[in-house]
Length: 530
Image: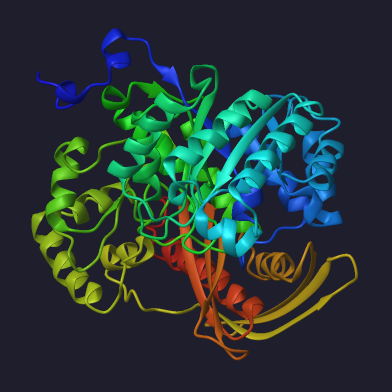
């Protein structure tokens, strides 16, 4: 069969020898300094360990001179990593470089990343320095750093708006002083892929000593081109890309690590390079970052968004059921997602409904399926997404909007110093019973979940918990989403309240109630013969 990539294959791919592109992760430096994404030292260490397990080559842990906390975080990460190079950022100033070196003293392998602005705009308005002063500072900074760590990377800030001849001169000076990696950043996300490719090709031909160093791309996403520009740089010979998980970073963000990695993997025949990233850990690492920062990615985010491997269109779902490759260019398992999700909504057809009902244990005949489908369409017109619990109710002839049997009557919580909390709940059952229980937990949310389990006698294995604001201001409502395992099934519950603990309690009760209704509808087992 004809390979659609064959006409554009990279020479290395044709020969069967794939070069490796280094992944330089700056989630904890360029990403973490972004408004809304700050992390404490414990969160930084946890993410750093996940990034090492992911397989990043270089981890930029922070800017030690920025603050004592940043210094301590870099030092702690440096002492922990054992297979990933720990990098610290520094301006071409003695104080910055010395602070970076001290923070990296215990690193398995250390890199100091020195930078200075080179563009006319930055030289005049930011630095107040001449070309020669910038050139001298770059050489001196690299030379000093070279004596204090295993390797040195040099960045020309705002490189893409710098005069090419002067940029080549500065980079040549950095090589002469001992830099082994040259970073050519598109600091303000101004360039297009063709321009980036041309600039890297030109620099590799004009920088003295270019054959002995690694060229690196660091692209921002102001025009939405960061990943495309990074890939263009790779095609032009860059063998390191600087990126972040979920593409977080200043302004519109950085190039997204997961998108670059999967583009190189899916289009391997074109690029002829690979990375040492374990792509199966991309989604878990993305979710960890969301958990640590409280910032979720948009649903349609490439690779790791909720909709990346979800299909609602009836035409798409029918194609997916026939052959996965009709609408997916990679497997969800390749990025750490369990499976493709056929989202049932108003655009879905009979084929997807029948398939999902079968997964849930229902096998209606043709006439019954038509009746269920008609009720499903009516429900789907009112709801954004029809959940498995709704389908159970439809298949069993129940009202999918049913609420009971348990109802929340009273809820109380208190939190102690150190984070532990207690919760008490009083619930009422449709049959007239009432149940009151209290529980201790790691926090108020954990405590209220434990109390509800005790009161209802249902054990929930919590797999996912999310809280999102609905609206703005101090009186904004919080929407809680829970995913829990019970028996052989996964169950979802949702709750909304101005109190996130109450929203969580409502979501947990929604799951408990659906389990109870499912059990009540199950046929009683036949009595054994006496």
